[in-house]
Amino acid sequence: MNTTRAKQIYESDETISVMLDGDSVWIEHVDEANGMATVQVSSIPVTTKTVSCDRLQEQSH
Image (cartoon, rainbow, N blue to C red; front, side):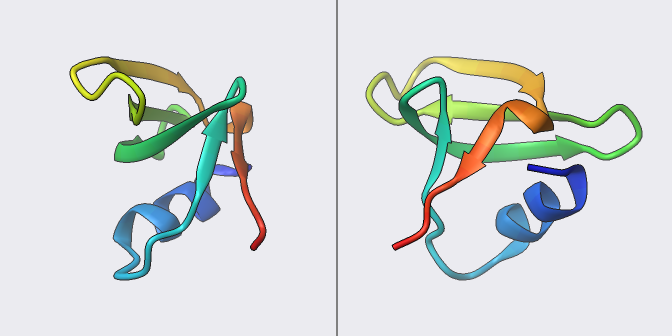
């Protein structure tokens, strides 16, 4: 996904499913200047990763 959409999901009041490499993640921060997002892996809540926004995929319901 693009950085703008990642920021929209981060700021949304809705719960929007986002995937990273097959794992469900929560977006914790979006660095718009660098196109990066810090995410928390749902299956391992203490694990955070900083990845390029283009690696994130929004799941449609």
